[in-house]
Image (cartoon, rainbow, N blue to C red):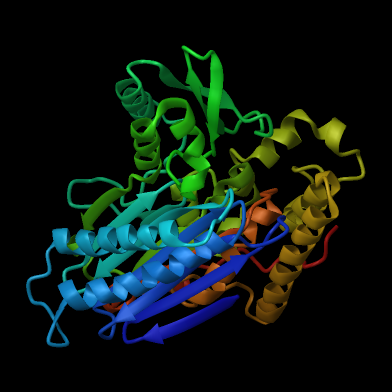
Length: 439
């Protein structure tokens, strides 16, 4: 499903694809209130099924509307004294109430979801974010394609919560030791399906006294799951330990940034699921920002396109094993003329099943159709010129670079603050539209 809505100076864009999975387990949403004074976006990256993420997203939207009416408006008019704390309270309260709805619902089995949400108050240019898990929120300067920084110089991108982070490891182990009198700890192990250059870890709760694993936690260090998932902890260590682990898994991180110093420049705020980093397709938030603000220019440079990705690592270390001489080499003229086409061929050749191969073929076909539409213009529009086009293209790139996950993206484009911006993106030429046939 892909759609775009334009309201006043705010443009909203959305795209979500199933990718190399049997079903799309992501859910997401967007709200624009009072002609763009308050703008919300959120992404729920589900796992184990689609229902929990979808139900949470629907409840979250309901409580965002209720919380906005209570805290952001008075007699139908936006409050004059909206503070950063108020914005954070609206997000956290909606999250807490939506979690309560999930807990009261019918059994979800082994389903769960991460949550990343943003609320922008455009009058004060204050951005509040709520983070649980490994999806991301980022604010981007559309003129430069770089991450915004707040007035303290901090990059405006949420932290990915995963078990490769020593801070997350320490947070979990400290609390587990406290509630179990030192009996429980987390054992962190690399996932067997992780590529050599990926830092992907799973965590197991281990009892010293029992000398056994009590339960395994899914990959994000922070996720909302059915409470029944943790019942084994009640049986082994009692209610207090059970509640402590539930609280650890559901603990959100709130960050609020001021973007007032960007007045006079067009800005974008993106919410994207972890499908963007599957197989390190977009290995850093900075690369994510570059790709989304100018997809055509980003994909036209095949060196930076592949840099630090799992696919590049395979092409360097396993070229003779995974692909024979019939595949164009990276430095060949044919590859440089049509990098995406040759990358697509390579990924389809190593994809382990038909679903994955069909996903790659579908994403490449969608990209081909866009290139054909703009062939006569010699370049693709940038995000500033066409936000929805770049978002729609953006969700396909991780699949084309070997990612095997659902990919979902929500975006808001704030152009009111960009009237005086030099038309850098408007005049920047993308790479010439490449041939649209796989080599």
